[in-house]
Image (cartoon, rainbow, N blue to C red; front, top):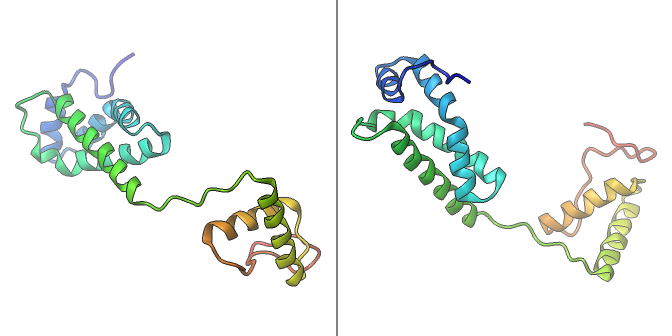
Length: 162
């Protein structure tokens, strides 16, 4: 299997990208995309966080390529950039609010079902079970006692895309 960019070294591609060769930058990023993602996945331990970190790492490589001075291998520098991006993603994740955990308690689930039914009945909606679950989950996560059901038709319980 051949490498993207042929036999050109990473260091030569980095120098060409620094000189303004967009093709060299694209080859360099394509060549190391899997490696960056693997590093980010290992550090974050979560696939979605790893994807976010990978994207941030590739942006950081693109913006900071002028700081690569060639004293070490390009892959060494890239490893550090990817690791830093993954650690930054973990820090951002800690600052994000976590969604409220739903209880597995059957009595609580019954209460929620009755509450949603009462709200839906008050609004004269006829909603199938799947939509009711969505509404209840949305209601719990936003922590509001009642929400207007935008996007639902008031006729015969069919959803509309308004």
